[in-house]
Image (cartoon, rainbow, N blue to C red; front, top):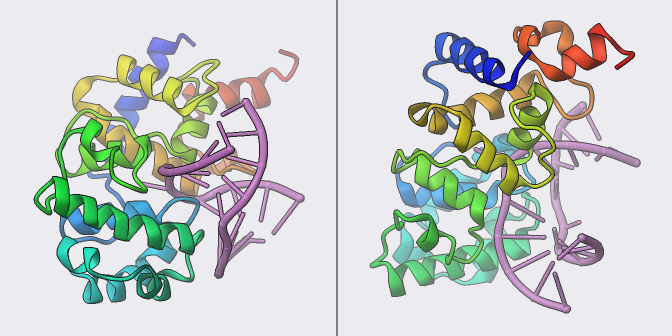
Length: 217
DNA sequence: ATCCCGAGGG
DNA sequence: CCCTCTGGAT
């Protein structure tokens, strides 16, 4: 199957079966989403959702977080991965929000990426989820699933995957396709032993094609 | 032992 | 490009 067909089948399937896909991180405003996404690096959303309620109660906005100490923030997030780094990032991020962005979460990726703890992936999440822009955040799931499905080929870096997906996906589907790929990767196309037996989209999957149909090639 | 919605620094 | 950060689930 040609790559163009894979994209068409991909969009057709998920726009039909999961037209309302969204993040599983709990949040109620852009500030909370930014904090949650920073925390989510190398950690499950489920665990992030366990620590954010108390964190948001103590630090409900950028001003309160900016005036907090790294040590106190740490006590709220000690059960997530890299709590020392993330506590430092969160306080630094909040301070920069206050100093350069009037305490508001900026809209542009080039501004978001200046914030401590915010890399390209997090910036793209905020850009697409909060501001509904056609940005593709490539995390471990998007990277793996795109390559397996055959939406990307010979993509060895997240940036390469991002560029190919943005180029080939219909513009209005880029933001939601991010969630389609993540949810599929989280529950079906898992890293270690992909559950091809219960996967509904093997009919256009390159990985299934090469690993299950003609194992010779 | 490997993976989870990575980022920063060398 | 590499390495480090480094908790919890499987």
